[in-house]
Image 1: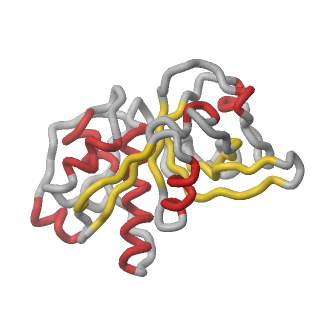
Image 2: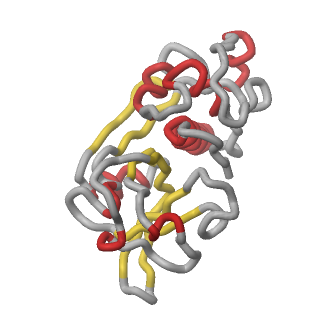
Length: 203
């Protein structure tokens, strides 16, 4: 579980989606890829887009974290080394995108994780507790300011709600060991989760 130290949530979300996509395609245990490479070589640490990372990784390999470790919230000069990065075997051939389509999201999540933008300006996010579901009415704000990864969906018998299972980048002390559940709704989705959905196709 990754723990961001600055505004590099997009790099965490992109990297986590890549880890899952590669493991599923190649039938291997997940590798730990470099968030820092995406920070240094793509959009920096004051916000960015997962789609920019996927575009960059169509022409560059994604380094292993062991070779390009996280600097804890600092942007460095891009230190990409193709010989070293090539060891990971991970490169992106293309990326997908959808907006406001729950059916497409459910179909795609059966194949791999999805990186999404959300609005996290609410007590529901900050005070999230394991076993609960963040509902659409609990969200605040009208702009995306955080990136997370959808890893699955399910049904909560207590509330009667269907939910997205979301992997956050705020460490294992957050929510349910780093995870949260968001109510599945149509349109923009709970906390805008349906608004900007992307995923990588790896080689």
